[in-house]
Image (cartoon, rainbow, N blue to C red; front, top):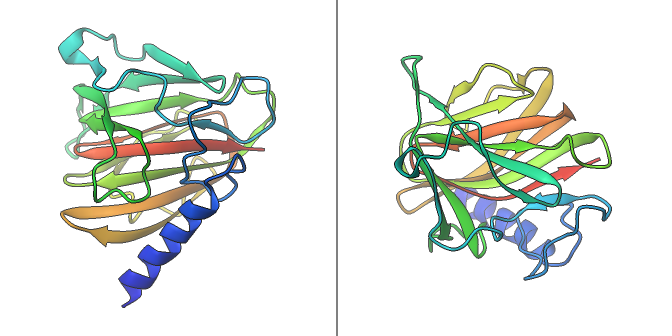
Length: 207
């Protein structure tokens, strides 16, 4: 019952964000992307690259390369830290949200042993909060904030803080895994996040 209530709460948050105000995060505001100069929030919705686009080792994308810019946010692909410590570098593919990913809408970023990076330093405001939604259908995840060492584990059970930034997640089970929304609160300039079978969507920065 608790999982059902949590899932309904998350779905309600998404529905509330269907307009241009993404304060609660997790929604799809429509086909028009925000221009770089417009006020906050600034969001990466994964709709800039073509459906099916692949980035990473299989296509020769250098680690750390900026692969597109959306809402004045640089998006990059970066090595993924394993539970044993070494880094590996595989791929991210632009896919439609899987059916079980009810918090995702339209195109999403499917990360497979790779981290997606989001650099907020080009925005016209200091970022004090970042929210993103995710779907995990296997393995574990990474999270780095402001260049910190990578957290390795489950986004459903993150540490309370990374690099002085508070980390909180609301999640619910879905068929084959979990989905949720992670909120970072503090002074944030950049993050990296990814997983082994992880879909990302609606990465939003707020003043």
